[in-house]
Length: 354
Image 1 (spheres, rainbow, N blue to C red):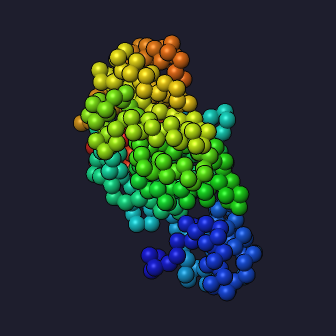
Image 2: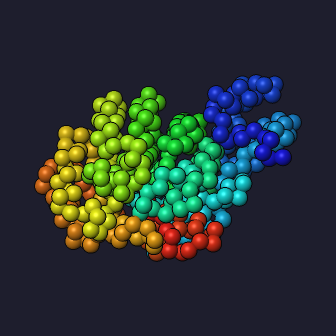
Image 3: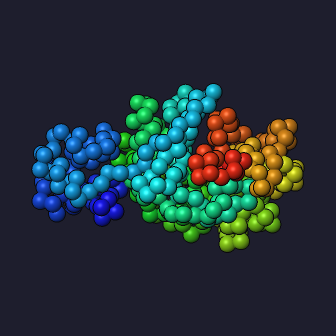
């Protein structure tokens, strides 16, 4: 039975060495095996031709390299591609490939569903089913590279789920995807998006990673943020900002704040000025996001002129800000929409975190 086998793709290099030693194999075999799985991205032990048939047989009997497999693909007129991936237990998640001049970026999911409950986001409809294993996050990258034949150079952990709610597996994923024995994607090219789990954000400092942190802020004060995001009942906005200052001071890395623009809710001049004061003196960048509207969820996107005026106010007050470029809107690009269709849900229940 697969569930009784070792999930070998989730083992880091040290753990793989230990496993092979326990199997009576020489230590140097770990490098060969690791490269087959994480660099050559093979799907079966039979493909590992420089390993003996006996070793391959032992691996096949005791281990699995199952992960995520693409079952649907949509391609936008702008080249953005959305993939629906099925996991070994039948659950599905989504990944998005975005092509830029500087390289290919992939946005991955970290959980099946989400329990954060953000009012404007359908990712939480149905709640959290489970967190993804390290192998299932890796395979979102591996499957896209196998399918396209092109290298992924940037990773955004901004799909379905809250990455810091799957802390251990996410940190392991970051270390393994950046391992020189595997795809060796620079940690500086990895962005982790979180709604602001303060304790885990501070804990992340001790991991000594060089990733970029993006905070899903979406409001400049506690009252409005509590209305939009239930997590604000657990952590105040100033606790989040203090954690961000700690992260910046300890790592030297700039923080990004994501701010979805909701018409008549958080797009006023007053909100802009509150946001300026909130982040004053902090090494940060504000990313304004034109909202992907979700039927039955909070609000409509702000008017284009209001988004531009909001941006100008921030710029006049010396706050770094951009408006996120929209990609793939013609292919259910709102995160989770394709998955929801596969599950038989209402097509309008699109996820708008991204």
